[in-house]
Length: 451
Ligand code: IMP
Image 1: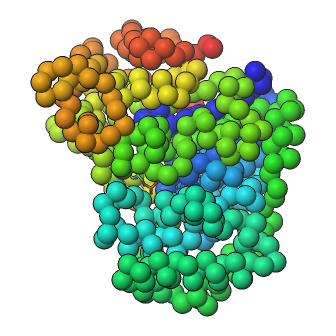
Image 2: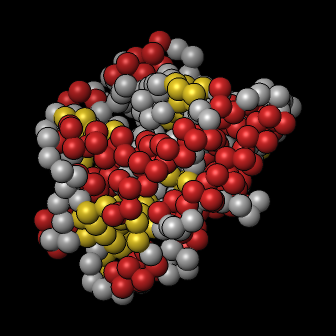
Image 3: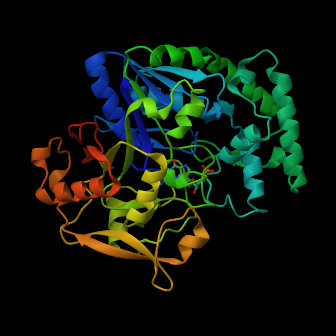
């Protein structure tokens, strides 16, 4: 077991509050050890991790949530897909909100894969031909990961390398043919950026011109991260792995077909670090989800949808709108059959529950404990939308607490008995050790339990 190593995975459908958890963990570790490594292993500009510090909100997309901490080195790993233009915007945005340079040192693995406007154009056109990706964020994530499977990815090392123009010109030609094959013109296709503003992909020249400027800006961050990760892993420096999205969006375990294309589970760490780190060697593997409800953005439909006044109240109080696309998130009751399945297939060791302050004295905490099929027979979660459409939830109710009264609490003595009973029940059902409970958006609104 590697001492002082932590991995944080989204335990449900993304947007669980991982960014805040990673930021708080990193700030504690830096206080004690001065130096830490934060490593993101999957996803790209589809993610939106919100960190609130001194009332100022920063939304991170590609960059790990340790970025706001001096003493952290943040690595954007091989398992990620990066959009150079959006990444530069994100760096500028951090500098603007924090009124300083990025506090952490940023490093990009040269093996990370590019996702470009070409991918976004193809993804948009494909939506008219096939339904599977209709819930996507439109950030070109699936086409970029498909490039790897089809064996023609463009990587960061291609962008900063000497032959970049030739490689990216060939890439444009390929995507022009794909988009034209589906009946549209790539240069005229409108694609979104990080701020959800749309602009044309443009001609090949315009596309290459943009990349020429971007490669100059990004070059200083790009390294061969393999030796770096190896050296740090063999040192005593605390190592934090930060996942994006969640198990419910995993292409194998999530509600197929509205899933993402990366590996948001701990197993993605082994792939991204080229086997330097196996997840079994990590001391704390924590799955994060919201304590009293779940949220999901996209086209998937889960059995426990909340179509009540309570859903609107939660959406408003917890700001349940996509941090990347601004879409309102669907609100669900906690779905234990799905969460049990996600725990079984990813084997976390610890549990992090967020948003404990979202509970209302006049609404019991309703939890789905079982599914039944249309004939009333008990069934289990399966990663398939058609199957889930034919299941019905069975609920159990728990005594609520007044969330307002625990907002910002950071020790167990400030928590009412109902919270402790409820947390223990979830931990027992999922066979995980409770580790952290969050009680509000600010960095120090976290109760850390012994582990
Ligand atoms: P893609 O990752 O853009 O291909 O989107 C696939 C599905 O995953 C869609 O339903 C998205 O809404 C969802 N998704 C992707 N990233 C996130 C995230 O960071 N949080 C929540 N949902 C996400």
